[in-house]
Structures are given as structure tokens and as C-alpha cells.
Length: 168
Image (cartoon, rainbow, N blue to C red; front, side, top):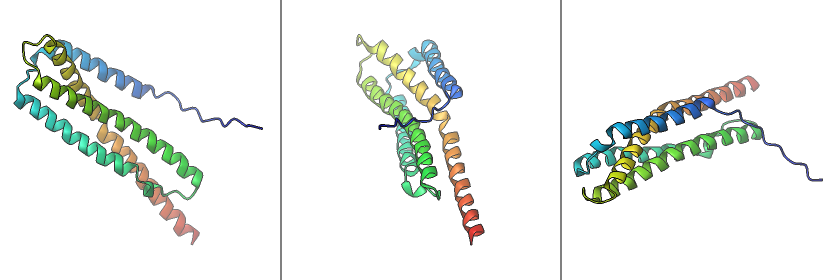
């Protein structure tokens, strides 16, 4: 008999959907009103590229630390498995932010090479501005997400220490 293993259904994260849609909508609105103000001055684009390159590097370090298997401190393999699934889901979200950073850096590079009278200048200017705004909005939740993950890990470590001292 093949018993079908049912996966627990996660409730829809309406707050996350709302903030994601708000970030995209805010980026569209900012691009509509201010997208033309972005010039392909190497100094301006260099600052933007530097900021998001640093953020991308920090994000890779954080993803590496979050994915460290030694962080699973639980006693039960089942609880460790569920904890690892939740951590992987959070890492996936941070990977999405990293991909926005990469797309922004590619767009900045292309925009830097684009001449002001090229036929695609207007489009590249708007895409670059949109990705800059979106990357900024996506970065706003990063410290809170990391704090939440760290707090849960510390709470689990404290709980494990308590339970091991009570058992002895």
C-alpha cells in the first residue's frame, strides 16, 4: 500500500503578501514620479552599486550562518526537521532579496554603459530606478527577520539547557 504522506498546510501569510505588494506598488509609484531623475552619472550609480553590493555580501553571510546545521539544538529529530524546514523557508525568502540585488546590479551595469541618446535609455532608466526602490523596500524587513530567527534560536538553546539541567 502506498500511503500518501500529507504535508501540513501552512496558512497564507497575508501580512507578507500585503507588504510584498506594497513594496512593488511603492516602487512603481516612485518610478513613475521620479524615475526620470536617475542619471547615468558614474558617481551616483557607483554609490548605489556599492550599497547594494555590500548588502548582498552581508546577506550571503547571513544565509550561510542561518543554514548552519549545528544550529539545530532540539532533542527530537522530528522537531529538528520541522525547525530546519522553517529555517529553509526563511533562507528562501532572503535568497529572493539577494536575487533582487543581483538584478539591480546587472541593471546598474547596463545603465552605466548606456549612452543618454540610446533608444532604450528611457526603459533602462525606469527599470534601474524600479529595482533600486524595490531592493530598498525589500531590505527594510531584513533586520526584523534576522532578529526573529536569532531570538527563536536563543530561546531554543535556553530551553534545551533548562531541560538538560532538570533531567540531571
